[in-house]
Image (cartoon, rainbow, N blue to C red):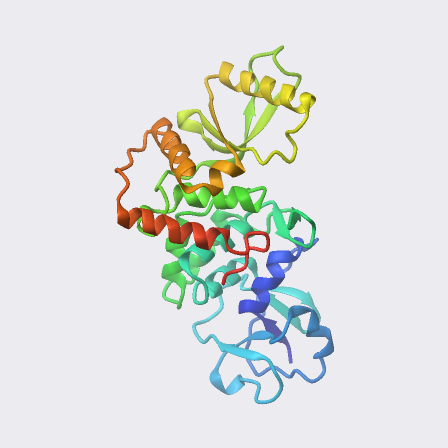
Length: 313
C-alpha cells in the first residue's frame, strides 16, 4: 500500500525543499488504507506527527502516530507528486488548497507566494536560500479551478488575488503583502506589481548593464519599489553602482522608491512610503482612521512574527 503525505507535512516539506530535479506529477491517489509499519523509519524526515491523506474514513490508520485527513471529494490530475516507490506527496498546487483549511488568509497568501518564489527557508543566517520556483500563480489558479466545490477552494481563490510570482526573499513577500492586501485585512489595497521584473536599459553609457531587475514594478505606471536591506549595498563602490542604476532608470522615466528596514518596521514611516507609492500608481487612499490602523497593526504583527522562518503562530 502507498503512503500519501499531505497537509502540514507537505507544507513543511515544500517550505524548505528544492524543486524536484524531474517533477513527476502522478495520477495515483489514495484508494485504500495506508500501512505504516514498513515505512516508519523512512518517514521520520517529514516530521511528527506525520500527516497523510486517505480517501475515506474507514482508511484511517488505527495504530501509530499519523494524522489522517479524509478527502473524499476526488483528486484532480496532478494532485500528488511521486517521491519514490510507494511514497507520494501532495503537489505544491494541491498543498495550497489543503492549507486553505488550516491557515489564516494572510498566512495562505504568504504560503502561495513562497510556492511561486525563488527562495526556500533554511538555517542560513539570512533564514533562506535561492531555489527554482515550485509552481506559479497560473498553475495554482488552474488547480484551484479544478477543485471548485472542495473544502478550501473558495478561500484559495480569494488568496490568489494577492499572490505574485518570483519573490526573491521573505522580506519582498512581506512588502508586497503589506502594500497589496486589501484594506479590510490591514493592507493598502494597491494593485499587484511584477516582482523582480526585467527592465531593459535603453540609455547607453550610464551603466554597463543591459537590463535591471526591480524588486516591485508597476509597469503601466513606470514605478519601481526597491527594498534596500543594506546587505548588498554598503561601501563606496556599491553606492556608486546604485546611484548609476537609479540614474539609468530615471532616464527611462521610471520613478524609483526605496524602502529601508527602518521604514518598513516603523508603522508611521511605512504609512508615508505606502501613500507615496499609492499616489505614484494612481491609487487613492482614504485618511487614516482607528479601525484601519488597528487592522494594519494586526497584519504587521502577523507578517513579522517568526519572519525568518515564515511559520504561522
